[in-house]
Image (tube, rainbow, N blue to C red; front, top):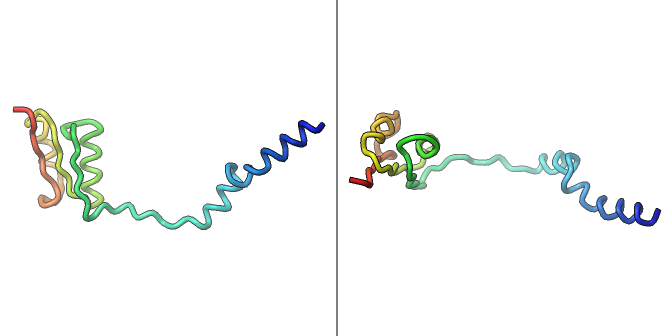
Length: 96
């Protein structure tokens, strides 16, 4: 009985912080997140495809200046042709 009461007391301290009840209570105080990246410069390696290309294009779409770096210049061609403001988008092959 004492062990059960001690366990309930112990876990009750964390209930309001780490449960759905606590989440709903804190959610009302959250500030909106600004996902704009204006004024930032990103160097993204592996920008010729896959995750690197998705990160480079996503950061550019949110306002960051992106320098996409990859080994193969031919694989950077789709990235260079992507619709993006030219002043915020550059591709750089690094292996010759």
